[in-house]
Length: 512
Image 1 (cartoon, rainbow, N blue to C red):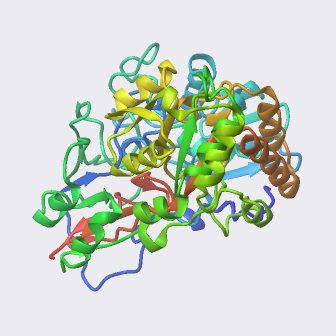
Image 2 (cartoon, one colour):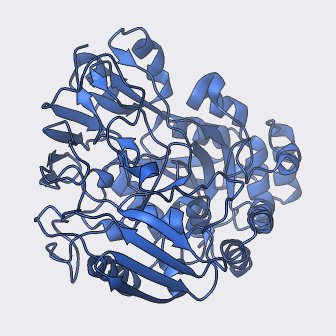
């Protein structure tokens, strides 16, 4: 069986450990009430093809499930798999599927369906979360109706975590041989009416494999980016929503609102165009000067108040991959405009001679970061765009700096992979193309020993810091707020709305 890892990646291997009947959270005095429509708004849905997503995972788990999921403490738990056995050498994985799981079209889930999903991801999806893992797959097969076996050519440490986002869909889903249009999953709710960027209506699945669940009649996902979520929560137009920290004081004053936080952190950063850098940012010392000019404590205070954590790393203190010595050696923890100007002068750079282009989302914190760089004397054209527009513009690499944020992920590899040369959606980090960085990350994921794996990751991150590919501003926990009539709900480790031991399958609506 798989060995325990210091990162708390424990595996719950028995049916008893993951029977997953209600309740996942402490029982309340009231009995669950059936019915009602939950109105939910966190992150969007960037594609109907869950195998091709670029990071939006705030909706998919409502209608699609995977062999594994991530528990609120960050550990791996079986989901569609009833049990998981990993050989001592880390090469062979055997998954026993739960009995009686049905797709939304009524078909029973079989190991052959799992094979079809793995083959689709391996053969048709490039530059995704699992592209590196799939290159190391030697074979996979359906041993029998409920047994799926996977063999790797070498160990791949984050595999079980990453499989939490390889959603198992019916091969009968419309568009299976190309781009999925209507995914047929096994989740508690059904992919029904989808208006991209507006809403997804997901009615309950009456044949869901968790006995008695879900309680709700449907979930209405609000996918709009232009709504005031705090106002909508207070008005009762939303039941659960992610909110910005600046809205928390008014929400705390409302007796009908509960403030809750995700278990993993989001991190903010300012990236440089690393794919095709334009002068003066083709000079690493100029990027260093910008790092000195950023007031990171002030920025994180704006983003998260007293809860913001300033650090130069991908993870916050307390995480297995956090390195205190690297944190303490951070030369940019405190802003030093004088030093920034000295470096520019040493490099013969007069900021007034350059007009920079910044690309970002339409978030207030991006204006703060841009203004800090502007204080060096640069003229800046700031393009603040919606999500799709920002992603498209980032991919054109016609910009210089980009202040962004990235949410919780199921494994640290899912943060590193987006800085790799063939990583998914690399624009947020300026499209890094660095074979040496790639090799360090690859060594990490192929290392079975956790301590040696940690060192490989730290070496890769130090390399990224030395080259100033991005400047980490810090970390914060995202607030996902709910109205008090929402029962048996607490945010999970990531933005996933549902997971093996909790989530919206267990939610019911009571009295405020």
